[in-house]
Image (cartoon, rainbow, N blue to C red; front, side, top):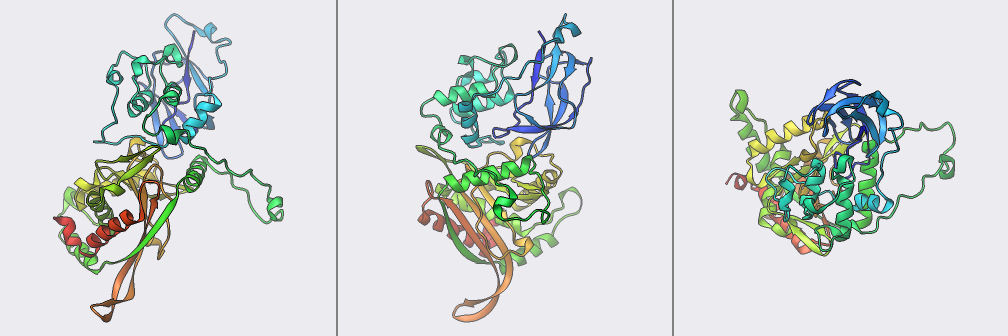
Length: 432
C-alpha cells in the first residue's frame, strides 16, 4: 500500500507548521535522503528529506498551506509495483498522539544538544543504521537513555518516530526530565470576546497570532507559571570596556579576518567566564535532580518580526571575543531571515536578553526553560557615581539576573553577578 508522508516534527515543541513549498511533483521518483519539501516552523524555514523511496503518488497538502498539524498526512508515495489505483482510499486520517502523549510532549523541556555537548547515557543501539527510526526519534532516545532497538515503531513500515519515544519515556523511571515532563501545565485562560473585555466594536483591528507568536506566548506563560523567578540586580561601570573595545576594533585586520566587536560580545564572554567561575549557576532543573552543564552554551535573544529567537553560542567559555563576535553576527543575520537550523537555537544552558540598544535602562527577563537563569542587560549611560569617596561621572550598565530558585539560590546568583561585574569592569581579564 502507499507510504504516507507525515508532517514532520522539526523540534521537540513543534505542534504545527506551514508547508511553504514542494520540491518534487506528482510522478517524480524519490529516494531516501532526497529533499522533497520546505517547511516553515515558528522559528525557521527548513528543507525536509524523504525517508522512503518510490514514486510521489499524490500530494495531499498543497504548497502554501498554513497550520498543518504534526503527523498529518501530507503526501503518499507509491512503492515499487504500485500504480495510481493503489491511491484510492489510501488517504486515511493521519495517526495522532493520544491526549496523554500530547501532554507529555507539551510539558517536556527542550533538551536538544548542540555541537560538542555530550548526551546523557546514550543507548548503544541508537547508532545502528539498520533500525528504522527518524533522526528526531534517534536523538530523543539518546537524550532519554532509551534503547531504541527495544522499541516498536508506529510509523510507516514500522518506523520508530517521535511519539514512540514519548510513549516509552512516559513509562520510564528516573530519566532526566521525567518529573518535569509530568509536571502540571496550567492552561491558558479561555479567550474572551472583545466586548467582554470592555472594548467597543470598531475601535480595534484583529490580528491573528502566527505560529511563532503562539509558541512564544505558550512558553513564556509556562515559564512564569512553573518557575519561581528570583531577580538580582547590579550596576556595572563600563568605561574601561568601551576603551578596550575601541582599541581592539582599531586593530582589526583587513580581509576575512576583520572583526568589529560589540558591547554584547563582551557581555557574552563575561557571562560565559562567570559560569565557569561559578559553575553551580550553569544548571537546569530536571525534577528530582539538577543538571550541571560542562560548558557555557549561551543563548542570545534576537528580535524578529512577530517574535524572537535565541541563537546559541556553543561553548562560549572556550571562545575568544573575535570568534564570539563573528559567530553571533552570522547567527543573528540568519535568524532574521529564518535560516537557522534547530540545533543552532534549541538547547543551551544560559540566556542573555540585551535591550540596551533600545535605550532601556533596566528590566527583568523571563527564564528560557530549561535554563537555570537569564541575564537582562540594560543600556550603558552616563550616571553620577562615587569613586574613592569623590563624586564622578561614569558609564553605567544595569544588569538583572533572573534565577530559577528551584536550582539556584540567591547567594549563588550573587556570586555569579560579582564575577560577571568584575569581568565587565576590568575587561582585560577576559583576554587572559
